Image (cartoon, rainbow, N blue to C red; front, top):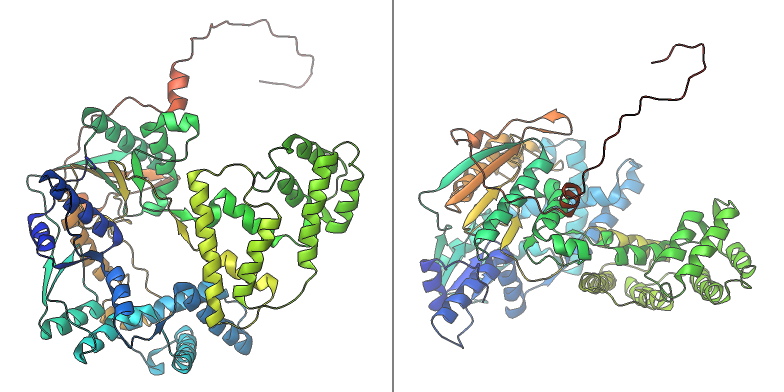
Length: 604
């Protein structure tokens, strides 16, 4: 039993007990409600109970897709991005507009298409600029290919499910509860209306708001000071009550992520920091980082990108990386080989020349040189085959290639590294899935596609959720805490400035009130978030930083009328601070007998 899980909302508990379908805004809330339900059953002395129907909306739609006969083929995210990239690239070649960055442009164009589908919106050529006309060409090409191959975007699922229910091909659930939704998009609104027409009872359950809330405002010097105060505040609460349920919410979590990882680890888990442990037992950060930033995955991509001619820095990395076979056992000899190669002062190497040079070292570093030559031979042999293959065959080939190089290394992997490797192998499966939408491609194209897939994939290692939850404003929807700190409440964070999609005319976005379309809509959405967030705990700290990177900041308008607070902070547990404070006092000595200076020039 997880001690910090709070008591479940009575309405949601009754709905789950009766077997109603509870649809949540995200996976985090569905997992949290399931844990609450399990805790309630355990507290009643039960050892066995029926699993409640608590699913995120996306998970439920995916289940409907598999269960309902006649549902079309839906492309996955990688397939969609690949098809749109091909469409944009073909148009760029035809029009000669080579200033466009194809991957980024295709991603924004796909987002624009999905917005139009979700909001059931269209626009014509007569109300467009040049960028909008280009998007209409791309969208027409997508629609043509989709019709030819019977492809569908998963964003169409709510509309198709509504159609299936109306035609009697899919049953309409008896009762549904929507939990944690700050707003209902038009596609979901339409689906609910259709289900109600065919006998479904749909109820919207807003989060349970706390009464008698104590709200305090804190102004910090900068982001680092703000995060450090927050971590020490959380430490003080946990020292007092280890079972406390503490939330930390940041509207711009991506800006605070590096500081939170560094400072929270130092203040909340100093023993783990000193021991070099990778798991975090005290706090859980909802936002992951790019999979390509994990060392073991970065090594795999770097190995795949090696060519017949490489810079010396690449060779030096190859000699020192721990993620290939026998790198640990022969690490000392490889470091000495790196030293010998640096003495030759070559900026780059061809693989054959490097092989010949390494053979001249075989008398001194024989075992290490032999292993390295075998490694280079594997790489060179692979690059000498300029053939085209289907993406699935490239995925299989890359697996074999990396295995020959001894990746991910002979040493034992940590839990985080193991999970990263599993995600990498899943990405190879995503690459193989492109067989359904692609023709044969060469090796460099396959590596480029795989690299793009992995760099856009967020990696969050699995682990036991701790009592401190660090979340974004949307991930916190529906959650209630004993104590809550909201970070970064300056005037450009809440409400956020508009950021309309560049491929949809602004009047169209405003007319349909699409996300991030204008300041009025963002203000309205921020008011909804604030109403929920500022009542998600009986004890709330609201903070902002006076300046960041030398630029002054102003507090959010939502902090008006909230009084300044006094915090109870624990002593800093940051090992660097503790060690510095615990150093012995130094003896002071004044030395005014400096050596004579012989010069005619004036000096100070």
